[in-house]
Image 1: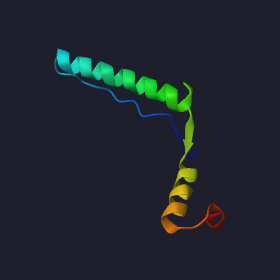
Image 2: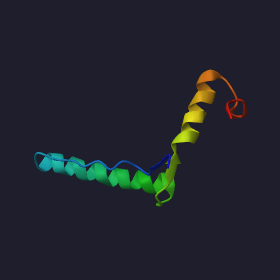
Image 3: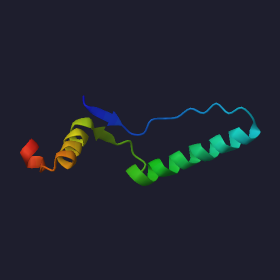
Image 4: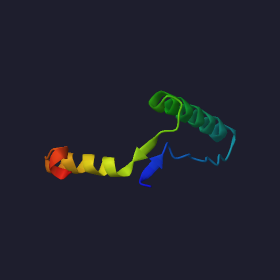
Length: 67
């Protein structure tokens, strides 16, 4: 319920040949980064755990104090 799945896909709309080449390079880069970061699998990200993590760091508390 409170999860994000993987990376947001970006759709490029190139205007000319050079822009198309740049867009292709960016697409390839995103594929490589996705494989490197999540092992090629779609990984869900828990929003609640991220929120608690941010609160612990910002307020100088431990996770146990916020739970």
